[in-house]
Length: 247
Image (tube, rainbow, N blue to C red; front, side, top):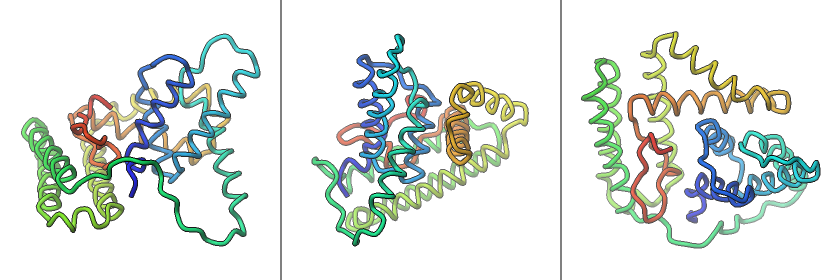
């Protein structure tokens, strides 16, 4: 698996800032948009083409202020994805071309990442203040340690399968967090995401809205308890794993 698979987030963020002409801190809602694309399996090249198209449409209208959010690109990314599906219809299957150039992750990189996340989860368990959450955090930490302890060949043999395990762990953590959160907090988070989505809601499909809302909720709840994101998408090459509050 080429490195671009796991730098999906940072490449989109950097490309968006490049198109905008200035570095802009990507908001929680923007990260939820990127995560919704990743969860939906939208290829990186499709996202970048969709961002290009969004800026072309925006520039054609000669609007003065620059685009501030990736939410403006959701519709055009969906358009490009639909066009790619139509263009591929009826074609014979082709071997996947390598995506990008650069070093793949080593077993040691992944083991360190899993171990660091396990340590962060144990710290969160000690500070959780709720037995059910502490148990969920500790169980996930133990599962990560078990994965990290596997032989190096087992760790790197099938990164897609490893990612599936990490996705399941995140889903179980989110379920525990949602169960433990007061209803008032969840309602306020829903209000926050609805306010952010309001200007773009009419241009987005129901499934797009649902994905973004769910990713926003997950990010906010993970940040509250200082939980790390477990996906390998959060492991930049040559860099330590980011803390939850940094993403």
